[in-house]
Image 1 (cartoon, one colour):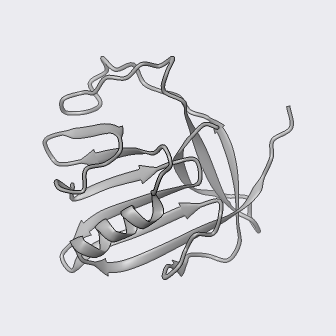
Image 2 (cartoon, rainbow, N blue to C red):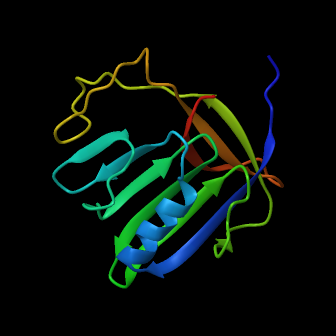
Length: 150
């Protein structure tokens, strides 16, 4: 099977407040199936349909089109968008030209102790893949985003 590369977009926003972050998530992830992975120092939460009431200082939300990552800093949230559709309104483009390729994801056993409290999932029902973002000029992988398999 021949691998299919597609054009991609990588963008960043600096110093977003909590209301701006919530607005970005609500705008990017409307009506489609998506997952979230939220991280606090003492726990991780994984699932569908993020609750915008209790936000984590670090996390990611993703669907089949893009992944939005954030990390809380002293002046607000740094937000990274990894997209195959160039959905970067307001984002500053990182780098020049990107290509993306989707590959199967390796899921760790839920009983492994990689996370503070662990988390459970059904491997047969969870259709997750990884989208690799490569610099088009050098073919170097700079980012790996989670994506929902179509």
